[in-house]
Length: 201
Image 1 (cartoon, rainbow, N blue to C red):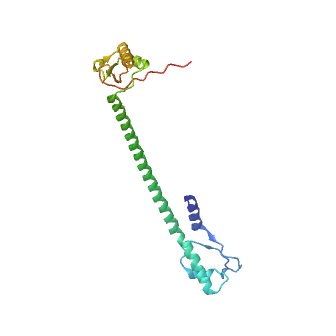
Image 2 (cartoon, rainbow, N blue to C red):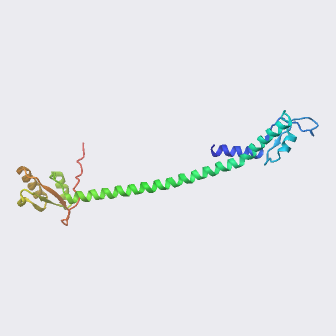
């Protein structure tokens, strides 16, 4: 039962006139009487004012049942309100925990990305730089380092663009494996250059 339905039921309980088929003995007109429910607690009073068409024992039992059901409504509605409030608090707490978890995951992913980027810089690449990468790195003031394990005399450092291209072509033509690092303008290993793609017509 949602909040709107409970509010309607509570309003109904607080002001409804129950249309029992009852004749007030004191009503000279003999018109059916309605009993307004407001914390009804006196079963005998209900029996005295309501004729349900049964004998006295049945009337008392039915009146007790009706009075009990009606008077139980406030406690039931309060319990439902309290349960919904607890659920709302629980949902709010879950949202806070989920937000914290998502934030933790995002921070971990950023840290892993930074770690992988640094590892790539330290490890270098066994793929030789392309002409576009060499040109882009030259424009940024960068240089290149090359290690040739099978021909150490061909290893070189601080290669500028022209030297880097010549060195690359020589190593490739000789069939030597090599590892390359990009260096910044201070000679420190840095991220591999990413040349800007040429505009398409």
